[in-house]
Length: 306
Image 1 (cartoon, rainbow, N blue to C red):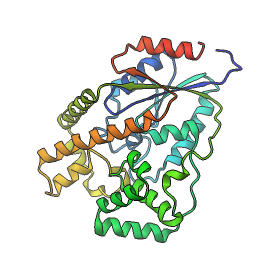
Image 2 (spheres, one colour):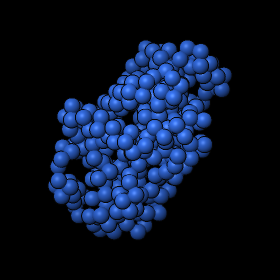
Image 3 (cartoon, rainbow, N blue to C red):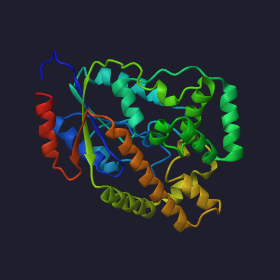
């Protein structure tokens, strides 16, 4: 690669439990480079088992960034991640012409590659009313409203994350326009080029892998991890699959078996939404999850003229 050409960011995407971490490490070692995690669930240092943070052995194989770098007590948004990731890449590309970003959080990946969309300012009164509806009527009430007023965003967003649902309804209630109408109005031009690699498999196989991963998490101590976080269960970071269901178990609303079943079901739903998000990106080159890393490596070299 010539020094005058733009540096390259390789983005490895796909549904949860498909094998993105293993591939990213192999590619990082082959290219002698480092990895940015764009998995928003893995940002928090108090959450390890339930977010499938790479093992200590995996972390030792390649340098990783943005993994367990903040606390559940910190206020951290996709905008914060975009700003910090871009700052990191500007410095990193001065010494290395290629970096890898991996994760299943499509919004966070798009923020780095394309920039964030601009949304109108909203008032605290609307947010307070929405939080009142959440507390009094439950998340299902807000989910139903979002499905009616913005079906496009409803299909993509994590509808079990009250922060995301409330944010979308906040925009709609104040502007009368769906949240999705403000998406991708103006593309940000980055100082690097991007190659998207997607890993895929048959739906049933993905679901089997998810079920196995959840069983492994339970075996590794997810119940104890979640129990230690019960005092902080209302924190936004903990409104996520794997913790929310166990909080219901600890409160006596579900049996342990039911909670584990719910984790599997909700993770499968999450994977479906990830696929819906990524399938709309025509720039992604898809590979079967069993494809040899050497094949993907050769594709990247040809694509990048290395």
